Length: 180
Image (cartoon, rainbow, N blue to C red; front, top):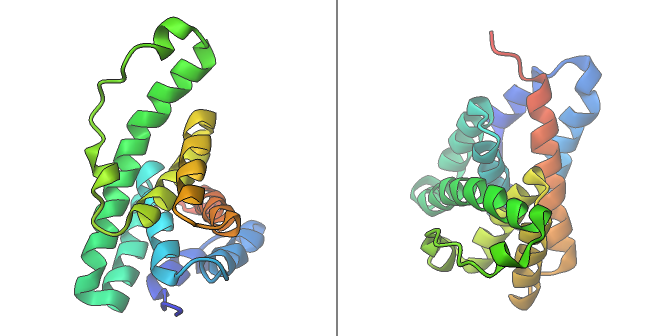
């Protein structure tokens, strides 16, 4: 199922010619073979929240709401939650990983993240959104954890790969978005 994305398309059309490849990549990664369209847009939206791109957030939310109506609420809700939780987790777990001291690793995080276990969509969808955000942060621990969770949920490596491609392209698209 393909979802029309007129608001995102309009945003991408405004990218400069120097970013033509990025403009073309946006539509191709969102229509991949391994994810459903709502999953792709959810990942893109979570990444928009993670990188704090108001333009990307507005465009994708408008497209999701237009295409899915009332059923868009859980996707948008999980994208907000995944972006926020991963903003917290990637800082914390990158610190633990980079410092590499067992004394830090032995300490409990004591950071609430219950939403990860009680998403509004599905556990797999929330994990895909989280994986995209983890890639943007370059958090090795988070990437490994979310990819492992996805494989345990019977999500394919191809779907994980597509989630990372979406995160990369959303990140690249923000380079060309110039506030007027």
